[in-house]
Figure 1 (cartoon, rainbow, N blue to C red):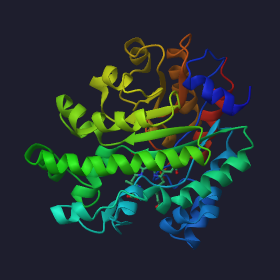
Figure 2: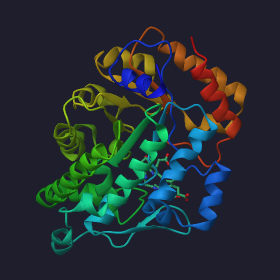
Figure 3: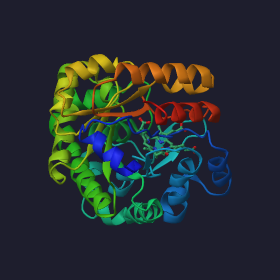
Figure 4: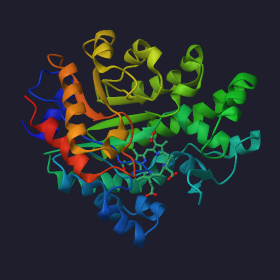
Length: 341
Ligand code: CP3
C-alpha cells in the first residue's frame, strides 16, 4: 500500500498497521529552503505563481516521509477573489485592504467567477499531482465561511472578535447575506480544486471556538455543512474546527469524513464519542516541536498508543507547525509514526 492509498484508507476508517502522517506548515517558517525562496519572492507572489507554490508544497516531502502534501496557498485567497484583498502587517498578523461594514461593500463582493480567478491554485495542484505520481495524497483546502468572515469583518487578525460577534447578534440578515456569498465562493473553489486533482479537502474553521457553543450551528456549522453537501458524495473532507470541542457530535454529523482535532482534546476520549465511521486527525501540540527529539518520540508514541486498535486515525499536529519548530523534532515525529507497529 502506498502513502496515497494509506491516507484514503484512513479517511474511510479502514484498519491499518499504522496511521498516515502529514503536517501543516502554516505560518511555520521552519524550513531553510522555504526561507530561501521567501527571500526572493513575497508570500503573495509565491501563492500566485503555480511553479513556486508547487515547489513550496513539495519542500517538506523531499525531507520527510510524509504520506500527504497540502497545497501551498492561504485561506484568504477567497476574500481576495471576492474583492477584499489582504496583506501582512509588519508587526505580524493579517491586514485586510478594508474592514467590511456597509451594505454597499457587501453588495460589491462578487461570488461569481471566484474559481476562475483562483485558477492559479488549480494549476499549482495539477503540477504537484504530476510530481506525486499517485504515490502520496494531495490535499486542497479552504477556510470555513465563519473563519473567513472574521477576517473580513474584523479587517484582519483580531484580538477579541467583537465586530464579527456584534454583527452576528445585531444584524443577522447582513451576517447571513455575507456568509451566503462566502459559502458560494468556497463551494466553487473546492469543486475546482477537486477537478485539479485534490484527493481530499481540509476546511479550516480556525476561529470556530470563539463563538458561544450554542451559536456555533448558526454562525458556522450551518454554512460548512452546505459546502460538504455540495461536494461529490463520499469525497474525503477533513473538518478542522479549533476549540470546538464540546460539539464533537455535531461536527461528526456534518458530513465530513474526518474531524481534525486540536491538542486540547484527548484523542482516545474523542474516539469513544465520535461515531466509528468518522476518522480523526491530530493532534500533537505544535509546541512539542520546539523541545527535543526524545520528548517528541515519547509524546508521539503516547498518542499512537491511545489510538491502538481504533481505525480511522490520521497523525498530525493539533494546529500548524510553528516557525520555531526544530527540524530534528519533525524527523523524530515522522520516524516514530512510520515505524509504529
Ligand atoms: O502547510 C502549508 O503551508 C499549507 C498552506 C497554508 C498556509 N496558510 C500558508 C501560509 C494553509 C493551510 C494556511 C491556512 C491558513 N491561513 C489558516 C488556517 C489554518 C490555521 O492556522 O488555523 C489561517 C487562519 C490563515 C491566515 C494566515 N496566513 C495567518 C494568520 C498567517 C500568519 C500571519 C503572520 O502573522 O505571520 C498567514 C501566513 C501564512 N500562510 C504563512 C504560510 C506559510 C507564513 C507566511 C510567511 O512566510 O511569512
